[in-house]
Length: 467
Image 1: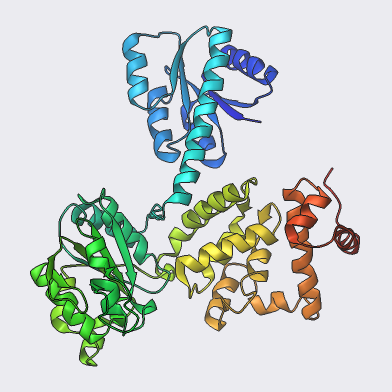
Image 2 (image 1 turned 120 degrees about the horizontal axis):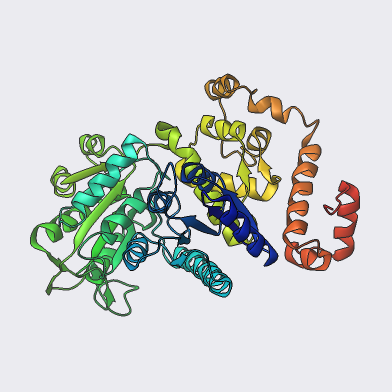
């Protein structure tokens, strides 16, 4: 059922619109001013807003403008008793889906509402598909460090400057590289990624520069390297601190002369490539230890972007967590779960040794194993299922300061491993049953157990369908 919000300072109009729309089985809420309307838009998930233009406290067009910042994809239908072509055009420019004059024609109103909801659905589906097809996601957060990164990307991306991205594993270095490419003049050309740590040192040169047939034992045919594949576009060298010294020398030459030579070849090949590099190592220390070339470091480090650890920007965790909640629940085709204030405080107190990547995994785990509202208890119970997140004494005291006890006391609530295992199993089965609308056969197939076995589990755990 679609959820609609009516913002209008005339009670009679609100009542009339509400009566019409509720008769059509829409879930409708109304408010008499734009300021409170914006607060409702922030807190609740509406599918459509019908907003008057001429109102006390705040003009309808101003409401529209501010709502576009809060939820850019929320469709607005503007309504006014003083409608003019100029007003309609201005509303459309500001992002309104349509404009309706008072008193509204019943048929036109309902058709417009249906069309606006259809468009909203299409926009949401398109975003989900694009997100699945593309690895480029939004850089979330409003902390000073993240704001500075976004500003640097805007300035640097359109240039040809090389960028060295530093930061811990899982902090989002790859995402910064993708945005540098997306906002560059090379965005229509390929972005080629090479994880230098994942390629054996004896193969890295062949991977980067390609090789000729017969140049070594397994070279049964000619191979094009990453530099050639990225020609005209961007080459992203991830974990460059793990590159061998011999490969570093060839990369330096490629950066200096814009030419490469395939392994086993003699012909020089011109390449037009912008190089971005990333590392979780201290390259200056690697230079001191003789593991990295200083001249290559200076070639790569024209612009430096440091991505901070998640614990250095805990104020961004609520925004990132909410985004993960919406995306993961959307992928699972289930209603978006909520995290209460105590649960969010517990999330912010965790050490996040795996950074944003670990937070994503944690949110997915909480979605699967917790009820509709994720609590402080859930965060502590599921924070360390396989030894990933470990709350030490300092972090435990942080959580205690937020009004709770340590993670160890939560685990102490289970007498033994079997009790904890039963708890996790119960929550998993409950989630799957609710997801499949308590279709036992479908759920049994999905989790790969016999139907009779699932019935036994339902009886064992006392699971019942919600009335």
